[in-house]
Length: 429
Image (cartoon, rainbow, N blue to C red; front, side, top):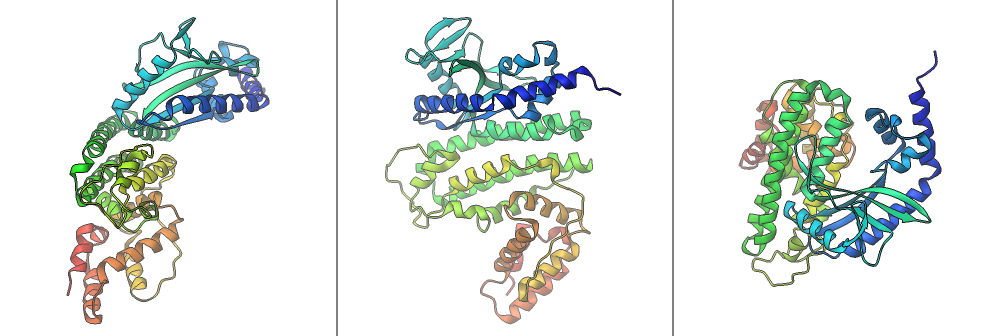
């Protein structure tokens, strides 16, 4: 049996993309360079990035939107409005509007057809005759502007998005959980409800980040740490609650487990490398939400000579979470790790491994934990055991150590990873 003509069309379009990939790439690079030069120095800007639509993404979009009816295969790639995607990432929601207004000031020359260009750069044009931000199908607003750039005599279309750190993070989650994951389509209503709730929570996080940034001079290091812990725990809890629900079909409460993971993340995880090497609260001001460009140098009280850069940790963690394959998190499936630990660490490992595949909550905790840490499962488990052991036995005598391990072995499996449990075990004397 022969295939439908549409599949031949799709392959032809993909071949056109391949044949012109160098041109698209150079055009995207030049565009990114120009936008960085014009808007990269704005205090609110984190950075400018670009991407070219992949073969698979191109094929999927053509089929999903019936684009094969709109143009010949030889031209569809050049007529697709978002074949090149460019993103200006900024700090907070309010900064999206500020940068958009700066774009309108820069792209001030009307060249017709709703397109505008800078006075000194006619090769780059943006369509600025439509209201912004525009409303998406999911009900949320986004600054998304069509444009085109001329490079080496060829016109290339592109889509420019302006996104805050939280909005950028949110869109990656939604894209991977819904748009790219047919397996979750059966949970459409559930997932929409959960994602709406998650978006609302992330909006709150944006507000809190903004407050921290604006009021950092009035906060002690300990207060900043607690605020960041709360934000991280809230974000992880909302997101992973939706993932657990989608995987097992049962609503569960994982708030305490999210808090326990955050305690690990900010004290013993691979992300703590991003917290070292600076000497003052200026680090937090410079790096929170990735704001390397912040230039204020006012001396602040309560400087932290230990150099805890919680902003750097937050940005590093969120960057990692953007690339997590959430559909691959095997909630409800057994865990296998290969570790060799001796002494007290070995005893702690045995207790955890004994219950890791019998208790749902302990199993779920480690599935979430493994997705967030940056090693393989065995490496991550080893790191966690070392952290756990250090938390509960530090400074204890041999007799106190025996009592601690005895109490640990008596605990219900679902209580083992909780922060309250670690504190209780640490207090045994």
